[in-house]
Image (cartoon, rainbow, N blue to C red; front, side, top):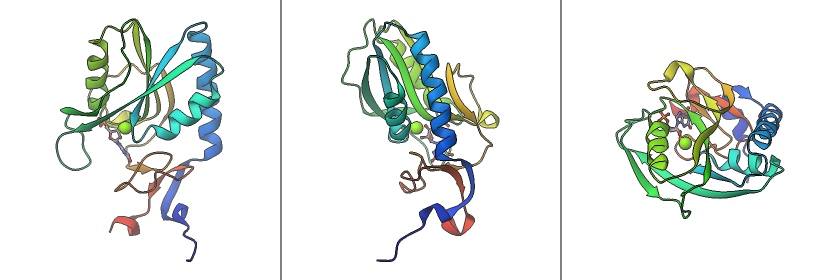
Length: 183
Ligand code: XMP
Ligand code: MG
């Protein structure tokens, strides 16, 4: 089979693998300082946060545990409705735990704001957010992100965990899809 240059489907690369890893390393140093001596529970939101979780967790020189949640926003299309359904819940009991939610992207913020309230209701010691990307122009609710990778323009992006129809999650960089892919 002819090899596929899926990276060629990007119209523009917003963040290279090097930029992403460099920033995750800086964020990891901050997290190590803030949680010195603690066991943090990293909660990854499937599926988009898989790459961020894998790289951030391996960058952290501290004791962590990892758990996963899958949620889906009701409603159609690419915009979040804020009404969220749990597809896969955590295995862990959050009582007294220091929870750090690991997210790929904050777009409208509606999904995350629901998730924060949901996790806070389970009796954790704290709930904080770590997100690789944020679209400030798309924000519909204020989210207090403790660890943020990059602010990006209000465009649909793929790669490094983020998908278009479940594809492109395996790209090493984050970019904007070329129109020929979806038209
Ligand atoms: P919000 O913050 O609007 O976002 O509730 C909810 C989820 O939607 C996904 N999302 C994206 N996925 N490219 C993607 O591949 C994007 O540009 C994008 N924006 C939002 C993502 O899973 C986020 O957690
Ligand atoms: Mg997500």
